Length: 239
Image (cartoon, rainbow, N blue to C red; front, side):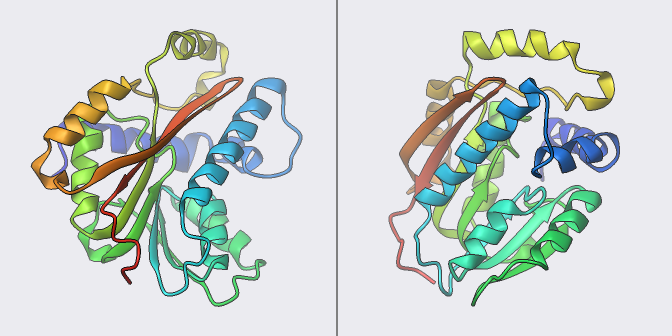
């Protein structure tokens, strides 16, 4: 069972993404012109998405991929184009509806996407070769991040690719400046995590035994700062 702190934050995120900032995120994930601050966030997210996609095999034919916190489905579409069976899930009904509508106009080749609304920790979603959680764990405390990874690892065979908010002085400044945003546009606070602390907790978690930290990459683009981390079992040939 997720911890009380995880469940509380999950409820806040659902409210924000499904009711408070739908229009803002629709614009952020489209070609709509943006102000300088949000333009840097869009650019940073694009770089991060491309990083995570680069870490996935170019040929995903027959592989199962979980897009954990799929948002408007941009990563899901790219994974499906490589031949993957993608399960795309998000807490927000509105974002999933948007993702489904956008995906209908895309050529997915032999790949497919099945959209769901709910928690990506739901065991009924099945098993996967790869799980990608882009900026969907950045709002949780380090202990809750590791717990979520443990739950996902039990149903994942090859790789866990996720992002976290690195604890940096620059990010602290951005938090302060971010308070100038209208309240209606603010997301629930992210939880900065020290990389060394996160790696120590991962190494100490029995449920993650056999999972090894591999590549890591930090992206700082204006008002976007996030760090990707790959955990791998080394079994990239599974199906």
